[in-house]
Length: 161
Image (tube, rainbow, N blue to C red):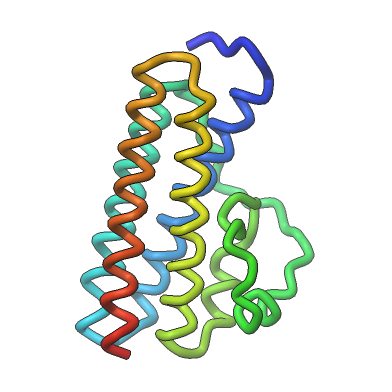
């Protein structure tokens, strides 16, 4: 696909980054959390994010991946977890392992996940509004709806913990 504007390419890269960070976050949290009510849902969310990434990569550009090395940024992880006011955290190149290691209870992980999923819904809805093709609009609407479903799953889990 040829992009008319650099902003379109950057938005697709951001969408791919959201999914890559989501995969890493849910995978690591599923390894860390021992609660069997929560673990299977986290694994399913990681699987969904992998599928989303594949759709984005295949639909828009094959080289949406960012390699295995994450550039280190100065992150005050404890503040992110305490504040939970940073729902766009997955739109940044961050060290997910450090983030996960700073989370000391399942509820904090779920609240962070819920906030990032809500941000993803907003991001994909915004992309649907800006997409130049009907195919692109449809794809982003579908991704937004899947992220909404993730929010519902996480909300259900929060009622359990």
